[in-house]
Length: 336
Image (cartoon, rainbow, N blue to C red; front, side, top):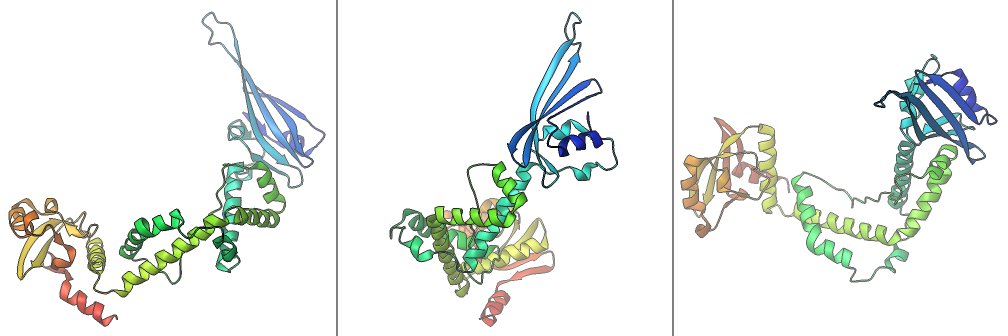
């Protein structure tokens, strides 16, 4: 293993030192500095060792070459370009411990992208997005927006309602996403002047992606209005589904007894709970086998199909009442 010690540190910190060699544990390590700019050098690592795996006993020379990292002189920081660099190293000096190991360059890049995303979102929330200018670039019959309105928004709104999500305003989500999974030049700029590169990258992204951002704004507003419409209609069957999903989740039981009512007739059956509330109906497959014939006789395909959740009037487990439709409807009316 290559030893992280004072000699190694001196090699890193001295711009005039371009090569470093160390022999340890049967390995020869050669490190070379390759200039990147006036303040940075790439560190290239070559590891050589001999082995006697040849059938006739002759030693075999093995050489592995890796781009190890970048050293930034002004910051006194060595960070990974390839993880292999740290595979080669072990500390022999108390000043160089695991805690001194710099994150991978990709980790820095993730931090940078998160910071740029936060900057973009802050500007949008503050109204610093040229919506009028972007709108002029989008056709009135834009296919992305029309497709979302027709096929997506209602389903997304219903899902969020069932999950209990509440929104006070449209939820805008714009993330800084680019093709490259790592940009070393950007990382170096982030290390030296984070505010400047965050500002510059946010400016460039918002200009290049203004049509996409506008579409996301419109879709978020449509989603918000759909969710408000669902919340305002207390007779919507989704209210029953959400409440049943909630009480079943809290009860954490495998089976319950449910009482169903349709056309003045009622029936009580045992049902497994693993899917109860996740659909707006009750499948006969979830009904206990002894109760299934009676269930089918009342809710068979030719009799109107599977029971709906709003047709459940009572849910019990043993002697414990988990859900009472009449009481739930009373709470809904009081909540208006």
